[in-house]
Length: 312
Image (cartoon, rainbow, N blue to C red; front, side, top):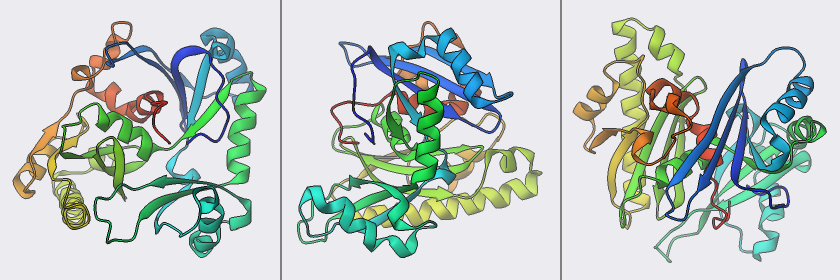
C-alpha cells in the first residue's frame, strides 16, 4: 500500500520487518528477465532502544540509499472484505471508513485506510474489495521510528500482499493458486489469480504450537487446519468459478513433520511444498537454501518483491 510518496533510489526495494525478538531486512531487485534477485537478507536481535538500533543499522546497511517499505505485523491492522461503495474511485476510502466503523477495534476517524480491489469476472455480482485499516498512532509510530533514523520510508506493506507477491512468482496462466504459510504469528492462506489477491484467511494456529505438540495434539491441529482449508477452498470455488485452482502451495515447515502428507490425503487439490530457489536468485545469500530461513523471512521477502506496476 503506497501510503507515502515514492522517491527514486537504488533499484528494487528494501523491506524492513519488526518482530518481538529481531528485525529483518531484505533487498530484492527485479532484473531485465523479470526473475528477482535477493541481494541482501539480514536479521538482527532487538536489544536496547529501537531508535538507536535503527540509527546504527542505517549506517551499517546504508539504508538511506534504498527505497524502503516496512511490513506491519498482523495485530497492527484489520483487513475486511466489503462490498465496493457506489461512489467515484477517489471517494471510496472515505465511504468505506464509515461503513466499517462498527467493525474496527479503534475509532474510524483515527484510522489510516487503504482499499484493494478484488477481481471478478461476473458483472452480475456486486463488486468486492478489501478495506485495510490501521490506527493512526501505530502507523505514525512506525513512520517516526524509521524516518528519525534517516530511513527513507516510502510504503507500508501487510503480510497478505507480501504473500501475494511470493505466490505470483509461481503463477500459472489461466489458473489460480492457493498458498499456505504457518509461522510464529499463525497461519495465513491466500488465493491469487492473474497477479491479484482474491481472498485470504487467517488460521489461529502458530508454528510454535505445531512444533511443540505431541503426536496426538499435532494431529488435532492438522484436522483444524484441514477443515479451515476445505471451507476456504469451497468458498473460493463458488465465488471465483472463472479461476480454477491449480494447486495449494505450502511453505516449508521443517519442524512440523507430516503436514503436507496430511493435507494431500484429505484435500482434493494437489499439494506442493514450495522452495524459493526455484523462483528467486540469491547468490549473495546462500542461507536461503535453508527451508527454515525461507519460512522465517518469507513475508519480508514478499514485501521486498513489490511490483511498481501493481496498484497496492
